[in-house]
Length: 437
Image (cartoon, rainbow, N blue to C red):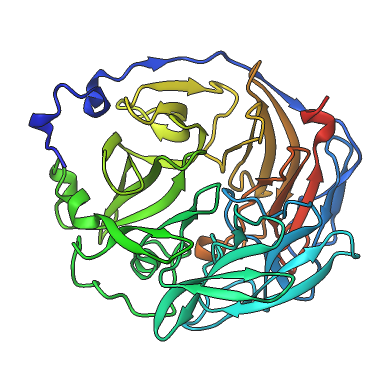
């Protein structure tokens, strides 16, 4: 990896020269539709208030057990639209104990929403589950998820109809759209340094190293299981060292392939024991080559690829202004998106046709309401499609972010929510009257 003195000719690494292009301001609209139940009071109070402003949020799962899917960057629907992936657990308001399993399964949306249990795994966390998702080579029948075998984290590909499985030697974090390759990281390290986003079932191997050279970003062939370390944490921690690195521990988090699988992005994060956390955004090719430091302003949060070279991300400018930006994955050029409309960090993703951005918010106000919204790219208009109460006891690593996800044709979205206590469940909202109007 080149140092700052060798990068003066490379625009991708000239952060000071990046241009900021302000996007057009838009507007916020409430989406007309049937009434939806919005919990506006704390858990235990019987005050589910109907709203005529939003389309109904229908529960795809039901208690007494809790169900959730996890993160926002995967599609839980199979290719046919009949089956919806979800995980099941008996508790809701604490971190799991080491080795405590959950159930993975799927909802039969055409079979009275029956939950079909498929397996159990102890390789999971509240915010991202077990990376459960459909595999692009067979999205009508094969899923992949993380598990444990012989004292190691692994991933399993399962045919949900025949029950046939095969085990891969590493867990997965993200897989390419075509289902041929995966990237991964050290889940035990992430679990310690960012509780709720990694796994705690197995001990961390490199806990004593602030930036280990034997852990980092891994690549794996999903057909053969061939895998290798492609970017080490030590490599990132040695790049463009500054005062922020003093007395810190480093880790990688949040990976995603671009649509064609030719590049992926990841976050390099580090923090001090007594507070303070920073983030850099990198992109590189799947073999670890052409590694580029794209943003170094200290904060990058949620993201999605718009196309093979453009990333949508909530980030900060040099002068400390947080916004959504379109970021060129090679040059680092930044363009403001949704200025004055998309004003808070959220779990953002493009619709399959790239005409809409799905987003949410964290709990806001005394009622702790999370807003679900759609943003039309063409004219910058925002359509709010729901507000959902999050009980105050659900905070920190086991909070329930909406983490909204698209279906495969952009007509429905699903999300996790605890607005109908005492459980968290998976809900589906029909949005075709907006996205296909």
